Length: 265
Image (cartoon, helix red, strand yellow):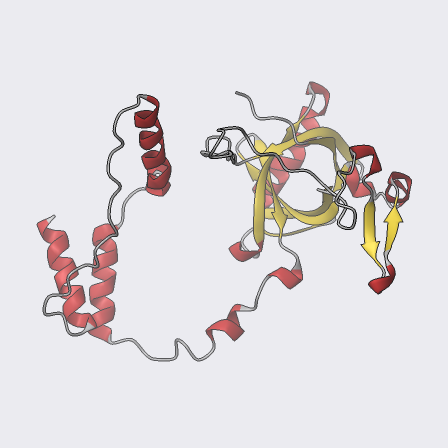
């Protein structure tokens, strides 16, 4: 099934503009989801919005957005109020500036999306912007309203399209220097370092998506399949046992045993 379009608008760089479409680069559609049931009847359980004081259900047309104003109640905002503060970035990705593509640390990356031209007329302008970024090794910085909130975004060329990453807000990223302070000052033993590098070399392989498969998902599917067939479900696996330590008393011994085990494999 083709991915759904998440957003339509325009990509703009100075006087160059082209219509574009945006869609999520990741999906959780294949994830197993459970429904909440009434165990006694087998019927589905539904959630309802109710008034906290009266307990009465609240119809959709009576629901409103409110902002607390202390203990005295809320300020209610109507759709017209929200439209009045609409930003240009609601419909246009206007590239503000460019940065070296490698300058932004991975921790700032939030969610990836695919950005592509939405009609043949804009394909040339889109390609010019994309290839200019690729040739210069630069990534574009802009802003876009997503989910009712303006987000900083990063634009990076990829193949025939552009990857649009939403970036985390400044107050969402904890400084690594403060967190790691005082935890890694010890100089590693030279022999241990050599053995670790050897161990890394032995275990290095080509990247493959199967390296990040979800065994829990696969096990759930197997259990569900057997339950559908009304057969006795396979007994679940017990807790994983901790690896035996043998006579390992320090990191050097552990590394030597790891390398020896790798050679046997």
